[in-house]
Length: 159
Image (cartoon, rainbow, N blue to C red; front, side):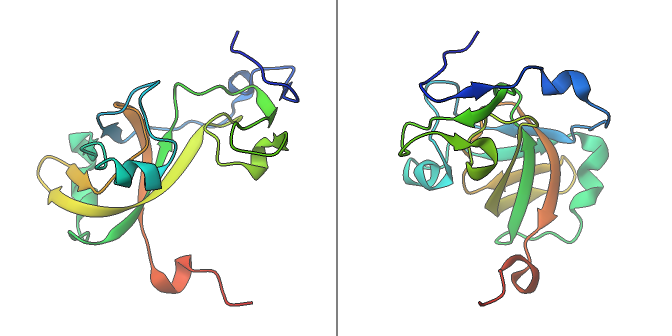
């Protein structure tokens, strides 16, 4: 069992055992990162050179890249397959005490879905390979979806 920090709480079940939906992985993130030597977030990844980040789609999905362009920002949704799923209250090392999972960007969550806003640096429409400016994901992390970033939609309204 993974180590627990003071103040953390574990669910009494494995959320993966309660699954009702199916997800198809459309490809994988490729990077230089692995457990123990990955940056904590995209800012750190960019500071460390980005990890030679790229996405390799299953070739069946390559035609779905039509309309994307180098330089464009995209949302990448990915499945953090090496993360814990049983922590509902966590004690982050950088925080000032325990917090609920839904108040954190931690990879440990009931459904280990992450999203990252990245810039497209290269596109190969035939092979489905996408260069991206950075990732904090481990090599071979499964990709769930890719969506374009739109300024008029993805920026919160002014308060």
